[in-house]
Image 1 (tube, rainbow, N blue to C red):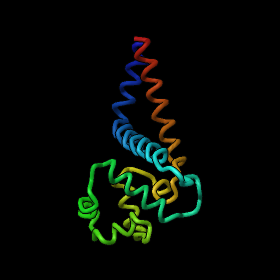
Image 2: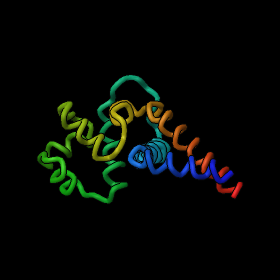
Image 3: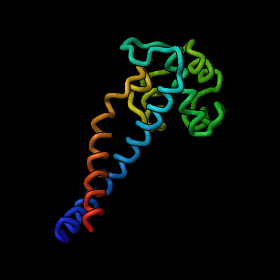
Amino acid sequence: MQETVKAAASYFYANRSAFDAGRLRFQGFAAETQISNEIVGTDMRTTKFNMKDFGLRLRKLRQACGLTQEEFCDVIGISDTHYRKIEAGTRTGSLELIVEMAEYFHVSLDYLLLGETESNSKAKRDILAVIESLTRIAREL
């Protein structure tokens, strides 16, 4: 049993950066799920891009981070007028801007643009499997 614990610990330390990246993806997934559940009256499973839903997701993510529109505009380097139009669903940003926003909030482009969270389900399953394995090892101790 000690060998199993040592192997798990060495695997964890050897892959610590992957676990940290996975933790960030999991946090992003949790935010996506919570925000998806909060948005009422919209079809979050649609495969069509909807500017209003896109803006609503951005607003919820920004608010979840405790940022004002002006603060977030400073972070991503666009005018507050442009960003207000994006949140209102009357305008979109460039591909580079949308990628930057997804990276900032640690969410997938699928989620940000379409509201789909399945692209993160593999990362979630991997993280949960590691948690389950470590929990089982801890119980054996």
